[in-house]
Image (cartoon, one colour):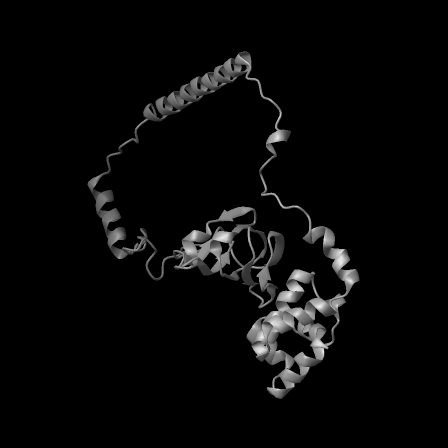
Length: 281
């Protein structure tokens, strides 16, 4: 049995389940399920097969033999359960079959109405802007009040003593100097090379992946949970986890990836068509 081979190879190397999980980023529950041949406790076949080949490669086993053993021992009932998802015809999101496109006729009256509404909106905007500018230009100037010489001397003495006028010093970097009573200032550094960011990190995030051709993909979230690992067949995959994510793609040109429905341009992070980067929302 494949699970017994895993367990014997691990014990021969003197490794615990915790040791393997820390090195492979595979959940301990999935490792135990693989060693017990408990396929019901594993995710869908594509992911489970990837975990098995990764585990076997880590233990020094022949990955092809591991894959063959996994396919032979995987229950037919579970294969049938996931058959609808695995064998569903794939079509890139946002496209329609040409045959299904209804003929579109352009109504000149509709276009004229749209242009009229746009022109009216621009006219109203210009009028409002002009009225606002005129009101600013006509604002009364600040009154200048002459002060007796004695009052000026008194005011100067207060300023020199520092008891009546407080001056905040701003450093060349644009941040208040030490001791300034300013709170709530957030400073954000630029993204480092190899990091794709679309917003605030540290929260639950969703990843949508479309694989055009079989490609090895590994994705680990911030908790150390491997949410995708191994050779992925052509298809669409929807994943969720804790951001940021560590992403490794063998053939970036075969993969399209969205984070929280925002497209990520993988070519920006690929060298020789291999992408290895940190992804955060």
